[in-house]
Image (tube, rainbow, N blue to C red; front, side, top):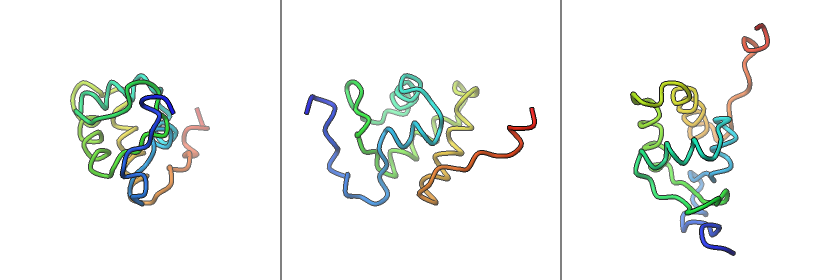
Amino acid sequence: MRRGQTRRPNDTDPNAFSKQQLLDAAEMSPKTFDVLRKAARVRGPGHGGLNWMFSRSDIEAIIRKAEGGTFTEKGPAAAEAWRNLIQNGVPPAPSDDDDDQ
């Protein structure tokens, strides 16, 4: 595997989620996620690394940063999706309110 493609040691942690799972839950681009992750000072893959595992404490740090001031456009929705992911282990179901518009 290339650098950045390897899994972190916490890949056996049941509370850890991959970068791909976090992206899917928040419906966010990898670039936006990496900007948010770096702002939260959470270690991640150098490039790509969709299999990179993030621990619950890493995700909580990213959530706190997402709810902060500079990420008001996508941050709160992503934070809610990630909270649901770490509490229930599944991404939130799409709401019916979105279909009405």
